[in-house]
Image (cartoon, rainbow, N blue to C red; front, top):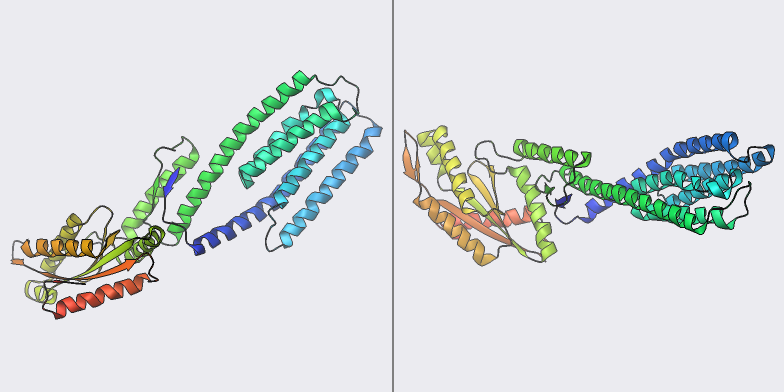
Length: 403
């Protein structure tokens, strides 16, 4: 799932990092109970169905179980109390999982049934990759394979039975590697796509409804794809409801501020320029006073249509209120912004605003401001510069462009 997003800000990265640490802590604490339940089931199976089900086996099994419980309990308590979870803690617990599993299989069975270890190891691999990523999943699979080799071919047998041949061991390890690779690929990919969707959700949570989810080339027929599609549709509806001016269909002030922040981030990322135009209808108050607000609304709607028709697909047109409009021009320098502004001024000047009761020609004044990718400028400062240029255009006689 490809997500087209603005570059992440340090603040966003820090928020995601804190969320991730909290999730890791919660996962480790929750997995304590999975480990306790799994150990109990394994011990019962070993004592009841193991090939070496006698009293001599009881004490070593209990010792392994107690050592494992102590390891999980102590680690869990440290995780619960710690402010941040050390990155090696999940690997430590996975190592304990494999060692406990291998010890119980070795103590209760012959080398001929050592492959039981790899059956349990698949659960360890699955939980590792799903909650902590591909790297830990690969580590879990690798040490599980090594543990199987030791139990099957290296350690002295604890129960009678022939050791598997090298051919059998190679086949078993190969099959385990194949199944583990599928699990790691599937769950690892799912987790990466979920992290991308989470980044997208965080941007929307912060009010940025501009980025879009593109499920194109990497779309997969699973529930995560359906969730992403549903969320993207919800984002579009939210954008229509809270990001659009109801009269003209342009962006409203809130959506404009969000769009400006995103475009300024992109300009800094690409070391490019961003231009904005502040536009005002000349003598709009007189139009409302003379012809009424319905005609004034028609004029605003027509003007918005002219601006959207003039703008590129990558540009944005917003209405701040009344007859004040802003046009955002990404990747545009002074020359391009002035050419665009003059083209739009001329189109408005040539347009006839007409209704069944009135008809007239109108003009606009335009102020231009520019931000370079290297400039330390905020959206509010950029808007203020454009507004100052607009004021100079109106003071100079209106129906003109000033930069």
